[in-house]
Image 1 (cartoon, rainbow over the protein chains, first blue to last red):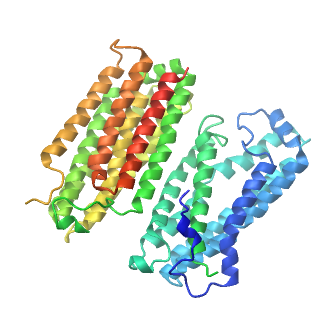
Image 2 (spheres, helix red, strand yellow):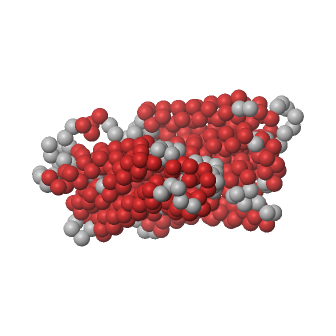
Image 3 (tube, rainbow over the protein chains, first blue to last red):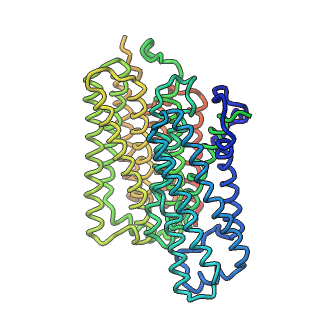
Length: 242
Length: 190
Length: 92
């Protein structure tokens, strides 16, 4: 949404050389977006199963097209693991801004690791749901809650990543021509962290706009969260030497 | 910036350009909130009317006056900062923050009163909208108040760059602006 | 020559407008039989967005901003007001 045409041109202030591994980390950004998007669609998780649905309905949901769901959830799991290398690419830039001992880089990488790890955990639970959909409906309901309440409702790791980026970018005292990351990215990150606070309302509702399948709880939150990754990648890509 | 040289500054973005990414995106999020209120109201007009009857528009009107008055203090603080003042900026920002604290106090009284009457965020779609959206707005007020206090703290001795006061002011006015639209949507439109 | 760019009487006028517009919309919203509820909602919303636009233009200093930012905000105010009025009047 904030990507501009100028993002396609090499950045005038690119660092002299970026390692192949760092370039791969930067490119894990679009890879994770594609994998998460494909996984969600293939597994038929958009919209997510309703939090208000009775146990039998939840069981029927996972029993329907189980192989397609399993394949989609595996893609989600692979995409989720890429939060880690992308976090490394972000941390590398924060270290260039703040120096090798950058606390912001450490917090950002730690939080990105949590984002990756928890996404993998949620997909484990979903795989268990799709693995044996004939099991007791009450257990299916409990596992479904266990996967979706935190998957949609836990916002803190992403917000921590964004706050770390904002702190480093907005604290950068270099003159405009020498900045590695633009100041608007810092403000965008603050907005992302601030807006993701609405995730706190997810555990309170089984229907309506703030529920895990609601307009704000799911769709707005997903757009804000994934939009931040789009913006981060757009900016990081400018730093790569082609 | 050229604000000091001329009584009518050249065209420029108030505060700093990047800040407007935050402000405009926040505006868009609240646009979704506004639409949500009307869509949910359309599904249950009677429940919305009943819910609105339980509210006290007088308290909300008082809060409107508080925020608008706060905005006047903040506008004058921005002008004082552009003129290179120190003490005036600080005093006006503290007055602005005081209106924020008063707003939070009125809102807390209103919430307590409604909770005493047995209402909660899960008491139907009207109270969902009321508590959730005024709650998110209240977080904005708290952040804005903190921001004004932080800038006032920095304005102790040396004159601040006017852009800093402008930026904090722009955020404060956004909080004011959002409330001006939330007020009729939640309290008035029967 | 003062460096103040928004004259004190302009600020006072804006404050008075905002407070009186609030009072007016409160009076209208309290249902004085001037029309159907939906039509009144549209009027009350129009007043709200006039206030919001005024806050943006004068308090947020968008009157000084480059054309693109000013136009963006004006467009937001107009489109959101129109969208909400349509939702309020046409719904049901």
